[in-house]
Image (cartoon, rainbow, N blue to C red):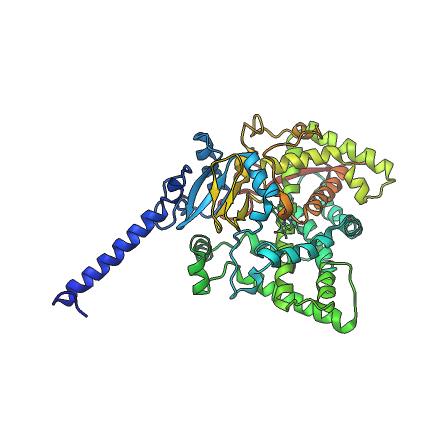
Length: 499
Ligand code: HEM
């Protein structure tokens, strides 16, 4: 039916009406926080408060740090932003963070990680919700008990000799070693053993699958892939409708090629392992409804969660130790003392005694929280006691870790690397969440620390390390990866310690 007797006039009226409706809707949506009396940053359609990350990329930590600072400046314990059109709450107060993550966790059990049925690999512990997450979490927690970790350390210690043999090529002080490459290979060997019971043999092979997997997760951010990420982040429902995925093809190929074959082989030949894969197989054989896609997907998240975090934290620790001789000497003295006590054997108990090294790692994770944000979603309407704050069901909540960890209110002189901040065991370190907090914290935090300690102990025990002139004085962040990573390779000089 025509409104006027001119088709073109009708089209113009139609388009204008739609534009006005969209305008009013967007205006209404972008005043959500104001209406609730929560301070907000000024959004711009269509990306809300997200657009300033473009065209540089998607460094999650960098833009949420910007939010954190803006709300802190206002003196607000929390504030509102918009990702696309969705209102997100940003927390800037450590007590409020603890209340949500720990005390009132039952109202915030989920994380708003994108997953799509078109990409089965995206459904995993990180993205699962509600009861589905609870049941997976209970199962995988069983993989990281102290007794299992003790077994893993025995596997992992086997990789130490490969590491030393490799590093000896650099030990005359003439060639510099790109240290991140080394810690990545070492951690890839450990993780592949723990997850799949196989020796990835990363130091002896030029192009291993595991190495490529690590690269795919964190390095291959093409413009098209970034665009997909942007869609899934800002307009997840539309992305889901359009079947857009947020995983690189190399990752799907790796998981689909490797895991089904390994599962089939073990089931057919009745071969057992003491690894993650066996846990999945046992659960399936005990009648759990676990598809192959789910097995692949859970393996994927444990591999990606474990590889880059541990290898980067050891790399940064080595960088800081190379910069500061006093810290390095203290770590080495501790290593020699513990080595003597345990007659040269590395074990779970011996690693737990490296308290100064633990302080160094805690400080690394403070200054460089490798997972830069913790996320939750409110799952039922929530009023926080003692605060004038109502969070509606469905609201995503962001905890910016770089913001907290570099906030002078919590850490005086925040940019200074100083392990002595952690020498008082009784200090609870308010505002410190490198592994998240509460029941949905990092499921493998202890393993992460153990992997990093193993790499550092092996290197500091055998080599004096110093910075190469090629190494930058300050670490510059890359803006297009999820985790914290750095622009320049870090080169060290090694000098073998004669014993
Ligand atoms: C230094 C090393 C590591 C750091 C800094 C780290 C950090 C984190 C953080 C901040 C979270 C989010 C926690 C939250 O939302 O409260 C997380 C979750 C997770 N991490 Fe780690 N992580 C590390 C090592 C590992 C390792 C070695 C693995 C596996 C082998 C792993 C697997 C996971 C998984 C599966 C989750 C999701 C847990 C859930 O939702 O139930 N992480 N990690």
